[in-house]
Image 1 (cartoon, one colour):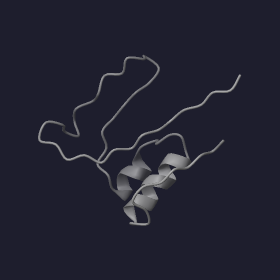
Image 2 (cartoon, one colour; image 1 turned 120 degrees about the vertical axis):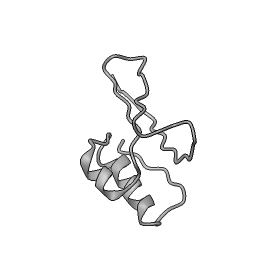
Image 3 (cartoon, helix red, strand yellow; image 1 turned 90 degrees about the vertical axis):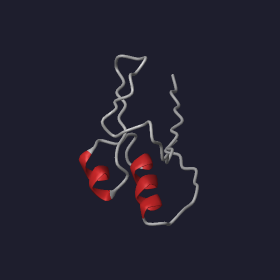
Length: 73
């Protein structure tokens, strides 16, 4: 059986959403967190799937891309 996933990464600026607000997951085996988008956060949190999503975030921080598609399949 093959499993596939699609990951979306959004950069937002909101008066209503704050770093300390933890989104409630509808699936008990999943956890979601808002993280401050910086290099320290990329090394503090376990960002999955690794390495693809973490690599995209690192490339975005270094202004190497505006948008991108990547696959590990």
